[in-house]
Amino acid sequence: MLFLARDGMRGQLVDVETQTVLRNYAVGEVARSALGYSPISQAVIAHQTRCCALFLSPVTQQPLQRSFTPEQVTCCAFTQCGTFMVAGTVNGTVLLWNLQSGDLIKSYKGHLRAVNSVALSSDDSLVASASEDSVCKIWNLSKLASPRMREVVPRCVFTGHSLAVTCCVFLHHCNVLLTGSSDRTCRLVDPHTGGQLRSVTVGDAVTAVAASMDDASFVAGTEKGFLFFGELYGPSVGLPMDFEQDAPLREAILRPPSADGHHSPIVFLHCLPSAPSLVLTASEGGAVLSFEIQSGRLVRECVSPQKGRLLGCCLVPRTALLVKGVCAPLGKNPVDPSRGDYRITKCALTTRQERRAEKRERGGEGDARLGSGEETDAVALAQVRTKVEELRDLRAQLQRRLRKLSAAKS
Image 1 (cartoon, helix red, strand yellow):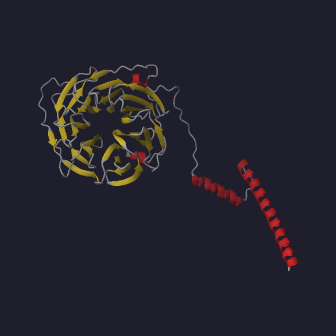
Image 2: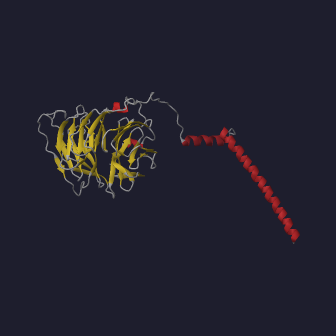
Image 3: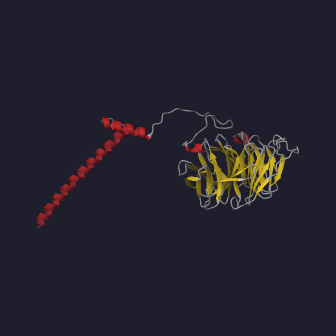
């Protein structure tokens, strides 16, 4: 499923397989990368431009809660367990929340200008932040989450881009970082040294990037609606770390804007584990399409076209429709600074129908025993009835006197 934030303060939960809108929301205006699904809250968190975060459940139309942020959030990412949310702000601050407790653990000025994108590695050990100041920084999540460290030093800093870094994502099977920039290039960054492993010229300002599930290929979306399909390494190279070797790579595919495809800035790219050969794409014009990574061929239209500009997009698992309320993981996150451990308690839950059946049985048996609350209500009802009877007697007396007075005058 996809959660789409559209122009006109509208939000929609769409089933991609059936192309049906499951639920509509009022979300306000959100930033391009400020949408994300929280596994622990079972909700989509939409960060509005007025420094407010909405928690939207797939099973209810009204927001579960509203939380206010210290600054306007421009992007966010979540750990796989859902305990932590990393966010970037319009002022260049990196924020870290514990969604289990609701505490803001860290607020650190990491960049000189706005943070455009944040990403977490597959093992949740590293955090990457890409900024308008053309700098991309990689942080250790354990150091960001530590309450003892007030000054956090990034693990490494990459300054290879000449213009704003608009997007970043970690590869799935290693912690190599893939970045996209307004300087029309995509670059691979070594997470240990911050060195550049490879640079690919796309030809247009890059707005979104995604890596295939096997890390062999990548897809880049541009500001004009181009889709760039390229390889990261060939079969003889091995891991993406070994780019010093000259190995033959498949020629890149550049899909231009078209009437049946995208003709506006690409705002969302994602490769699904259920369909590893496909990439899901969304553009600002509202088109949501899936393409084949190897050939760049359009496979199908995932969402019916609608009016209005698409502001943001995020994936929502289908299991979110089955679980209601907060779903905390069984194991505590290793870098969670909160004291104590999670407690699992087994409790019997009675449904509303069971409670109604019990009341009917009590009523049928003529059980006169009442609880403390019911006894108080019964006493109050008896007092009200007594006062009503007194008022009726007074009314009858007044009517008799009026009849006597009218008879005396006549």
